[in-house]
Picture 1 (cartoon, rainbow, N blue to C red):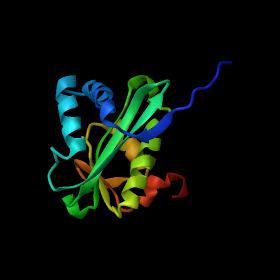
Picture 2 (tube, rainbow, N blue to C red):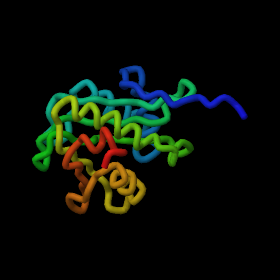
Picture 3 (spheres, rainbow, N blue to C red):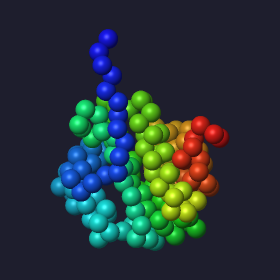
Picture 4 (tube, rainbow, N blue to C red):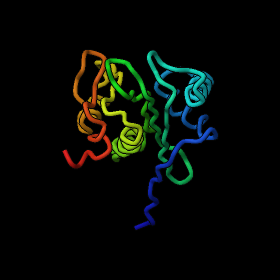
Length: 160
């Protein structure tokens, strides 16, 4: 049996943007589009509707390679305090709890920034994402959105 290399979770840095973009581009669009969009989002130069300036992103790193990331910001959308902007995990690492751990990271940030009610946009057909969000405490808000009524359940999913 080989040595198990742990996955490290940390705050995203500007140098991480190309790797984050490469992961996101596998879902849609090209890498250049996502380098620009993620970079502008993290710098505050691009904001989703009703977003407030405060935002954060975290990455999951395995063997010096980013294998997942999450980003979120404060918002006023749907009377929420926070919005989960993106969460992606590379295909070969899915099903290992990385998404749930990334939700814990961003959930802790939301709690620390007094963002209690957190929403996320999710396509109705994206059942995999809906299952992950539901397992981590989110409920259906409407056809395209899910919500955590209390970000504390994102930060501590095992206590529900």
